[in-house]
Length: 311
Image (cartoon, rainbow, N blue to C red; front, side, top):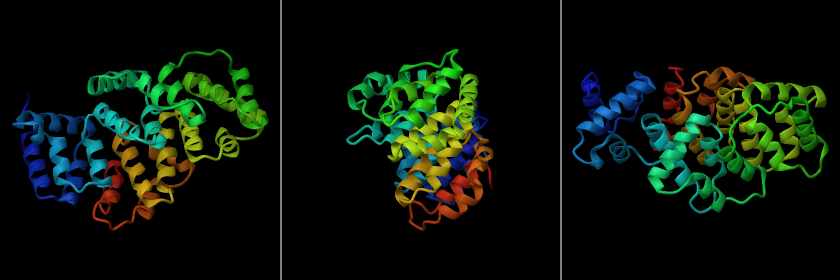
């Protein structure tokens, strides 16, 4: 392997050994995701055992909590990070927010990689695991099932799909959760933009407004709006999730979600901050809402600002 990053590996080890969190954030900000991958691979090649590899060593050196999470997600292989999140989210009570944050923000290629990595790590099929652990009672449930089972393909039924969304989200007192989700997660991005426009013409409402009026449970609203925005533009879904996370009333959940969204998607959807303008100003909200002085949270704000390239 090339030794182009030998000095970076040495500096990284020194920063981690010193438990210098601010220095680690600054070091991370100097490199792109591809460069961090190269550094991680070179670091791991020089390790004498599994514990000496970068991610286990990071976990040893950093305080357990959202700061560790955001930095591990930023440095780890994204497939491994996503699988680790899913394993944790499906232990005991299902954490729909974490599950949705992984499976709703995958294109077909990323989903195939996720399936492969999940099987490699656990020996199980992800879709079958979801079927066995998650029922089909709510919109949140249908999002988990159908987003893993169905590929996007031309539906060639833009007007009837818009009318079906209107019927379920506006007219009906008993919406068909499966029909709503199926339209949103299986339409091509190009067709869904037209379906979305037709819906607004038919109802005088946005899809988000209709979802928020129809459903009350957070996991239903958050999940369905995420799928809706991902179908319009993936970066807008990331922006929506960051907005929801930063305005989360529960501080622990706020930091947990911000760490997950930023760590996983800051590079893949680097222009999410532009879409965030639909709801506010991302940089200002990060500064205003991430103010905890707890040891395992105090540097999350700087990590977010750095990874989103605001500093």
